[in-house]
Length: 395
Image (tube, rainbow, N blue to C red; front, side, top):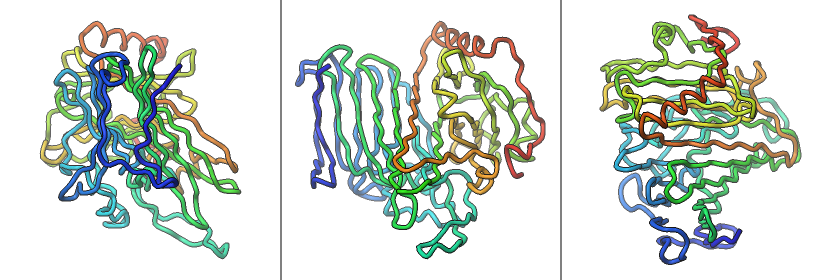
């Protein structure tokens, strides 16, 4: 396989390209696609780099300045993502993660797909670490960690010159500290011309000389038009429990979306999913008419826990649901550690993840995906806990 490659950022070799583009006609590789890199100017977005990939059918924007998140997408005039009260991309230099007792992450939260981690994710809270003198000290770990507000140190575009002409954006993000975690995220975000699927392949490596902890969760967020009254979350659920008493109120219809509701308080559901014979599982958000959906397919071994975030608040307050596969649940790291859901990586050890996200259009495609989920379930009914359980949450 032959590839065309272009490095856009490489801080080690002092490479930085502010504006650049390439297309199918220039490389004589496939038809109808284009990749463009630019830097945003003005307001909170000032200095943010974005790389937009348009495969001729599906387009999406990768944000190297924000941990290689995917900001938003579009397919055949259908917007993918959500409308956050945070309207524009926010340069991490304007984010104070410790603000509001560790809730500063929310000041920049508006992406379609954003990673939470790597040192920690979940609720802000106190944990104990060893300082530079080996003493145990208490520290505040902010909501959902630091990776989403850490710029990539290397960004490269890679295009296959032979069929199927893969279009990829690669990046490396370091979450590093002296006397602290030193984790490396190497990511590849790939699509194929004319496809409605994105494949995210991540490798997380512990660069320290000692054992260290790692957590990651993929916060995949959807608003209108996929989200609407009557839309459904579908997955081969093994067991599910509400996070807290507020979520318990809606357990009978936890997988169904309501209309935008003023004053709605978020409801969160923690679950384990069944896996197919190949070790993979699938989770979907399906619209009311069953003719539009988004599917998430991933290994249940690398991402063994799943969170469904339901925030059907007024549109101006962020009408959205989140489908969130992860290495654990978004509690405090201290709680997750006690329940064995924090990954431990030895020196130079790596953790591999692949997440495939597909937009499904037409009733036939949606029903085919539903059939795949039903096949994984094999007729097994889910175990539904009506109240929070201590194993899943501290509420």
